[in-house]
Length: 205
Image: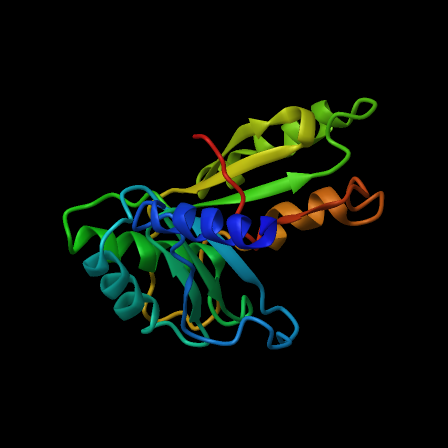
């Protein structure tokens, strides 16, 4: 009797969920595929990404980039997960394609990544990492903003990029521009653990 009552309550509670509450990702490719070297899957957080036209616009724009594929999108949580070869197109070029998709709909998606430095709050690491974040050349390409310093989490926002159609190499900001100076062994880098988020986690801008 108790089991039947529990099942009935569970079924009723599922019926009362908001229509979009259980919306899963809309996958384009198998996210379990083993990526090739230099082929990250990144989660781009977006502003105002909440309708099917938004999804269609991003798919059309990102689809024009060599090696780039959309792994999943989620309009309830405003993000897109994208896989690409960073030796063919840069993080910046993917972000630029996303931003361009938003412009076709009169929107500013402001695509951003989450970058983490695990040992940021330890010892005197914060000052060293902040010095890298404030680098003049880096700041012509991206803006790094603190998300949660206690966890060493930051958002990376992209400045407009002017693409040179005659250049075949990746242009603008790429992942190594932060990862190498922070994670390479001394003296080339700080030897700290860092990376870019590839899975969804709630964040507040």
